[in-house]
Image (tube, rainbow, N blue to C red; front, side, top):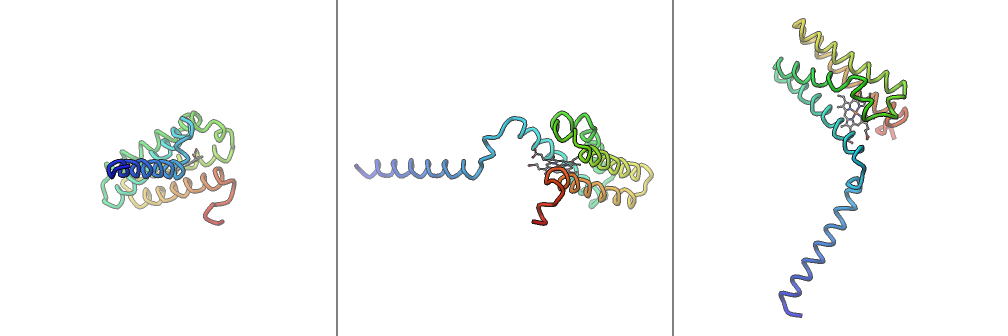
Length: 147
Ligand code: HEC
């Protein structure tokens, strides 16, 4: 074997190790389409909520109202029920979904009434509903953080 063949062989070995390692680090790559849709749906919610927070911190009403509406539009029972068929039958999920929506609506009302403090408080409460839905529905009643 000459030098360039050895170099080629060692890069092939390196590549195979890398691929093997990467796929074991990311086993979720083998998940179903529905899994990815759910993940994407929730990631958008997180992005909208982060942008609303940014709107508050930078005191830009347009950002809060724009992304607050996006949060509301993606939180109706019908939005959830498509991707969260099993969970949507769970009364706790339904309740948390409603409470979340109500707080986002209260935030929007606060903005409409030019009462940013009330809007900010409602936004904080809405985040608490995100957390409660996760701990009570996804993790079955106890936060994973408490383990
Ligand atoms: C009514 C229940 C409910 C509410 C409210 C809710 N979530 Fe979720 N969320 C879920 C469920 C169920 C999952 C698990 C999805 C899965 O893994 O299939 C999830 C998963 C997630 C994930 C993980 C996605 C991933 O990459 O695995 C993020 C991030 C997330 N939610 C953010 C939020 C944020 C931010 C809010 C509030 C603005 C929120 N959620 C409100 C039920 C809820």
